[in-house]
Image (cartoon, rainbow over all chains, first blue to last red; front, side, top):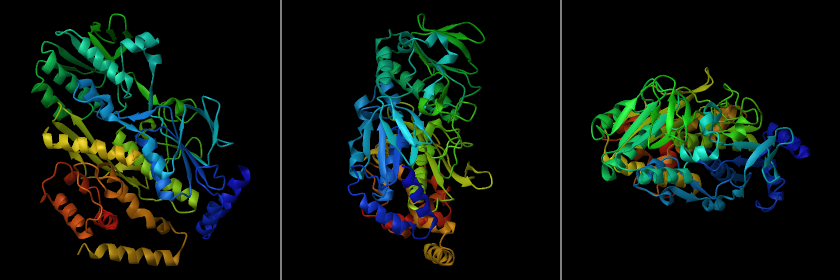
Length: 431
Length: 105
């Protein structure tokens, strides 16, 4: 590795870098075998950030960079749209996409669990003992839960009884099954942690989806939103209009509902103030932090919870050569933790890495946008959108004044666009 | 008037590149591509949509520029594009429109 790295650094210095690097690249032969002469990027996590970065690095480098994607799952399951599985208007298969579409870009796929990395030797370690060498490492680790704050959920049994279902997959279906098994007249309660957490409007959308299901199938049942925040975190006017409108008498919203613990046996919440709250289906979103691979390896340099990056390259400010994307980041002002945003992170990072590894110059004026749709029922949708630019003086991303906004009201046309959005963003990541 | 802007910008970039090969302006060869990539979430990779939202690939630049202007000015009804269009400058809009115009349909 050492001679190669030295060589690469020297190459980057001169104007002849591109030509010389091209020559080196051609001696590497087939991209899929070894490819020792080409720079190597290893991407961990095949979600909105990681899959996008892997595809775009491969596509934009036109084969000049070897890209490996490490993912533990068999297929991508989308968190956006997963509340429709909870509500029953979609199934898990409809929100899942295979990883095979990345093959045509030359992305090498490795199924496995990344557990650590050596920033000096520049290798990523997998749980099975494999070490993957890299020149640049990209981590898109998503979130993990701070269960240490909720001792009542320490056991696997407790976690299965009081689901988070905040990573789409089997838990999404398990929560759906709890709802279908619940007797009519029961209460579904969802607890929302203090922001920041993954997908700000997601819990409110989920409450709407459960209420929609109850309307169809269990009209005597109730939805209780217990929010640790002072107020509705996202799309407040649009959600409260639905709760006071079509879901009046079904959804009840309570703010400032901090919890001390969860009793999984009795399905009750021990509140910081007031009586315990009991439910028939209890859904607790524990406080969240950067995913384990980042949190366990010193990258969580913001309050030991989230990861700070250089917004031009997404390179960690803690460990050089390691880039971080998506929900694991200490967000810039007004930047949500969303799949759409992670996809945008992935492209800015991909462009920067291609420049860094092929002797170009990193874009100094990156732009990212966010579009977030929430389903009120099975067809009507509301959105929030924003556009953010890099501010060189503040060295962060800032929302562009006058841009962005919310839906005027829920509508079915945006339901069509939301489904279209899902198909296009999944394709943008994976096909 | 808008149509003249990309040409002027490219000329300006060319001059900068000629003066200093290692200046940040070199990165601008990919600026249009990078900006256009922010549209791909909804309009498809390189502007080729696989769903109801329209493709931008192969759309003449003047058409896209005019639409973006009309979204910004409220002349074209929209659910979301009037809000997103306001996030791009005229120069950025022109770069994006030109990039998509060159993409295969």
